[in-house]
Image: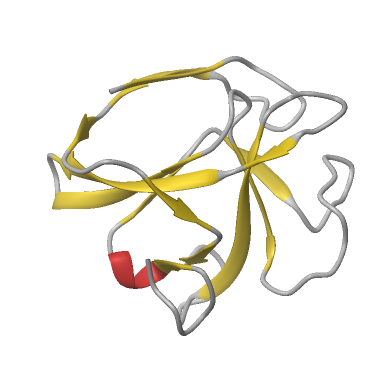
Length: 122
């Protein structure tokens, strides 16, 4: 699988990446990340389309081959990457919102960190 993301308003770092997909993609709405919290913090996640009239689109997760860890889980979105905000944050999705961030994609090591809510997993 080849992922191409051009530099855009959602994520300044564009690029191209190649992944070996092991399963078909499935919808995802939440992900737990450990960047700033050792116990993990849940984030809502959406795809970002770049369309001014409808920038939010679906995000997906799929199992991939990770040469360092064996397998991992790749989260992708629209042609402009994915967008994250703290889980339960009621604010609208907006690239100008400083509590949100955009990235081209995410890789998480465990399916336990992917789901629809903190207690529901994909």
